[in-house]
Image (cartoon, rainbow, N blue to C red; front, top):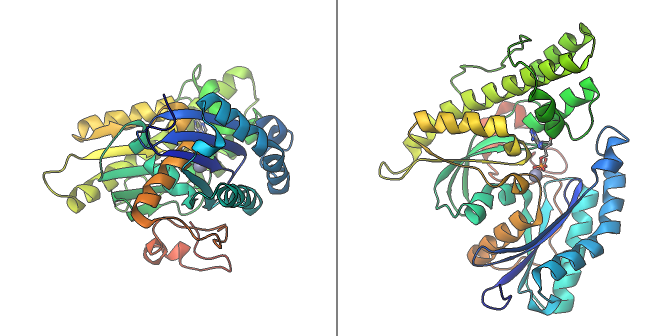
Length: 364
Ligand code: KG4
Ligand code: ZN
């Protein structure tokens, strides 16, 4: 695939623990997608240490860019647009990516776009599954659990969010309690394969509630108490993993069912109803399958990006950067990295728990 037939976009993602660079073109070809993750380093500490993560981004970013260029068979001069995550996320990492992207854009004299990381996840299915607006998005990652009506580019209406922990955070904490490694989601999924999901009774917070908000802290506490009462044999770890995976999945499906009814009232009666799942937790096969069943009985078309593009990556940032550029043009080089950057800036007003605005702005 030649670089020059279409606009070529470099996507830079450094908001958490992955240093990710991708080259994507405007025809939706992913020419390269390099992800250097810090899992080995981070498992030593049982989680992400922001200062260490930021230093690792700095050490990895040049190499990741070189690899991405080589794989894509593009040269730096072939790049038409440089898109980088500008927030929300761990500020040290976001600064590394933003300064890198601005310097590259200046030296190449090419436009720079600051991308909202959540918008990257939200628009991934447009890149990978070629879907049209509107759709209902279940965004489930390490830091966020939200349901958003994606009506068109830039028109996002949040229907719900978590009142406490995110789904990915719950997977990570469960894995930490079981002492099976970091990040927790993939470890729990692996152990759950040989476990019985009915072996332990765990709560489903907010189950059957009329609004589609989430809550996971009660489930986390109940899981901790259950684990304390048991010896951690391999068999028990598998059963506990299968039980918490099913509890999280049941909550996600139940809340999405409520949101789907609300979404159907928001869109034109003749539009196809589409459900998209995105974010790291969307790579869980059990959860994908359960959501697909919900979509089937709800007369809804279900889309999930390929598993490797659910967790953080540069391709989603390149694509969201391209769409943003089309609608809004380039970002001023005086853009300041944003630790907080909600997709829907008014959503917190509907949710009293999120109504406090701190020094860094509204929580995402
Ligand atoms: O989107 P992501 O890569 O980073 C954030 O933006 O937060 O999501 C990372 C989260 C972690 O909490 C991780 O445990 C979870 O996604 N995750 C999974 C799986 N793979 C990653 N959770 C459940 N099952 C998985 N297979
Ligand atoms: Zn993410």
